[in-house]
Image 1: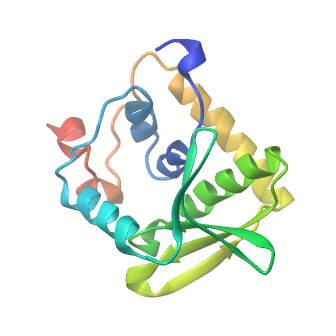
Image 2: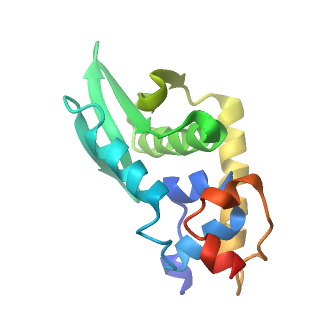
Length: 168
């Protein structure tokens, strides 16, 4: 992979908070098991939840799940199948808010967990911007590694679409 191909995306931010190895694998086009039931369920929830809202707003290297304009404000939403990965989802959405801010667009973020019937507002404040900056630098460090970080068994491994790749 050449240097000009390296960039941080919202997806990489999401995976960084779960497993740094996944960050390297995804960024080097090593695709997870597309037949994994968790991958399929996530796609289904994203595609069929909130049918009256617009889907996939693309900005830069980012694709936000849903968006709407309410009371003159742009609201972008990130749809997740579970709140188990709440911190990952918050930071992914903060990344999208930052992408918009850099382009002069002010927006509010909303995490959505349709199966749990939960919503959570996410605002890009100074503290979150600092954490996001550190996270982006760390992701870039991982992307430049010649090999993926060694696998480390964590609680998320059992539902991971890369499990066979890491543990076979």
